[in-house]
Length: 74
Image 1 (tube, one colour):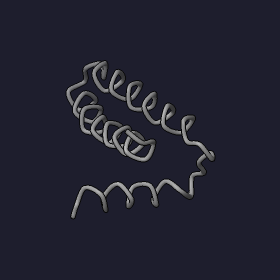
Image 2 (image 1 turned 90 degrees about the vertical axis):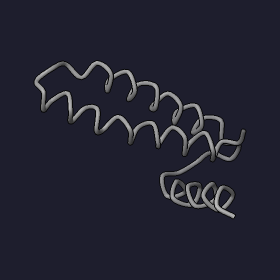
Image 3 (image 1 turned 180 degrees about the vertical axis):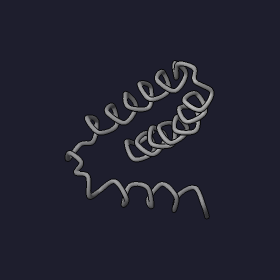
């Protein structure tokens, strides 16, 4: 798996944590599940960011997302 795919997977995991956090706050319960998912997603993103051979800037993230989408959607 290349770093672009790992980065996009981590970003998707981070986005999935948002509804969980909002639901937990709305029900007035601790957002433990959202916290765990955020930590895992951030770890995956950090792994992909550090593993990029030439280094990655924040401006390259949208390009990485579109490269992965171009491979997934024929």
